Image (cartoon, rainbow over all chains, first blue to last red; front, top):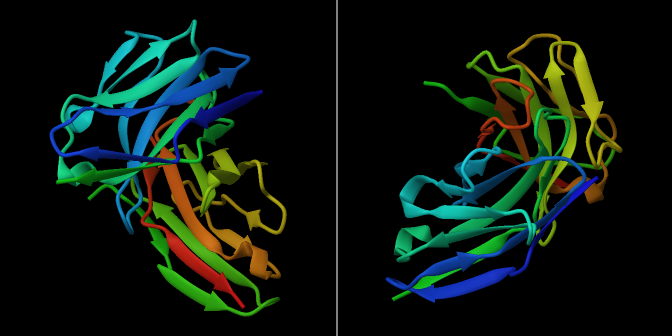
Length: 114
Length: 114
């Protein structure tokens, strides 16, 4: 069994300040973890993924996430928010080695203000 | 251009009238999947396919059918749509069914069942 919890449904930051989007997961197996971004009226786009290699994962557009097994967390961060980062972000867990089921979090809407 | 194509983009129908949402990918991907997105619930998996002629239920399969007769196509069929199937639907594919691969998403189909 697996599940993922995004701890904030909405996060608001000022442009130029750090971004933190929190994700906790639960999995009976070795997980693969992903962050996807969805801009308004668009499909989802992969930001980054963790698949049992380095625990600090760098993605596109300056985002990164750290896999912490002891805390069962995979939080997404960015040092400095840009207006174009405003979107909805989804944390996803799957069982490494099989694509039989992917479980999505409920999403975090990031608002970036001037 | 490598892409996942869904049609139609918008669909309004009435209860009980059978409909099909098409999904096609031109990347020779083995894995394809359907999701529905509802506010506050994130994306939930409806059905997935590990390869041609291999399909299986996701988390919310009731009221839906799929088929995978060819590698590129994975249509979603609603035999007798009901208002609770009003949702935003996404098709996605990945190269292999390993659970560690990037998902490529279509642009979505907004379905309204009256």
